[in-house]
Length: 117
Image (cartoon, rainbow, N blue to C red):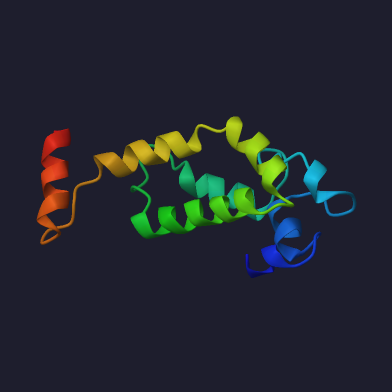
């Protein structure tokens, strides 16, 4: 992802499935059809029901990456078009809210956890 700030098209665009032979801004992201790093990321964000929950660190990094792509001038339009069609973020945020809080954490955070129950 370090190359996202390099001139387009760059390695990040190639690995995530953006159009690299034309304009990146006009890409149509289709991770369900194209085998890209974006597809692998999504498959890890949408685990099967019997899989263990996604770690908060992985979720944080995945959301950071999606944010960087959406905030980048070149990849923003294709990312927003793709994100509008996704339910993955909603599902993951629901899972994070349901996760038990780690012991010995901030009492204010624990109070918030008690309120949601």
